[in-house]
Length: 289
View 1: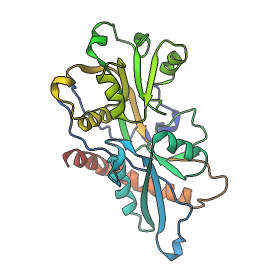
View 2 (view 1 turned 180 degrees about the vertical axis):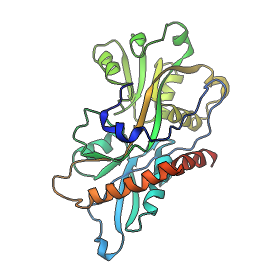
View 3 (view 1 turned 90 degrees about the vertical axis):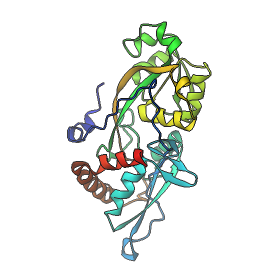
């Protein structure tokens, strides 16, 4: 999978976090996570104390960013909370919104930043990204009945005629996939949450579903899918690997004059955490929790 040149400089030094996952043998116990990322227009003057930073993140993307009751949680939330804790000039707050809404707010200049979208060429309105934070594996899972009846070697070409579920606003499946959707070669159903899309799959309403591997497992955990039911589905394609970022959008009215300084400071701490293995430790600790 060809990744955007934008992330090449930092990508080579990012530790890969991979997990082999068998939908037949196990379902990983994961709690839901969503975290918002934005800098508030009401942030106080740093001379009066720490500058309040409100980061907007997703509200239903376990295990990465989600709401646990009224509280933000998830792997990215914990990484960002730890990073900003090392920057005493800032006081961090989180807010959570659906992915599509977060990207709309970011593009409109209504929030300073949003996490954790992937870098995309068609998001050229994003003014800057943080360094890559986590490497994620994007997969397609399909019902066994569909997979056994089709020779699924090349994604998305070999999936012509399939019915797919997709999280609203996500473009993980890639441009070629969405071109086939536009041409009527693939039928697409979209829901806002992973759990809703998994329900489509389990009910036979769709044949396949694309999402990040750990997010799918977290959704199965949320739905209490047992081993017997999980055996009816399996990974049919590894679509590629992507990195999650904090994305910073346009600020035409200069609401956040401190944006670039904060982004620089955050990158500096994230690099130290990455190179020391601290980010990997936080990921392991999250799944062991």
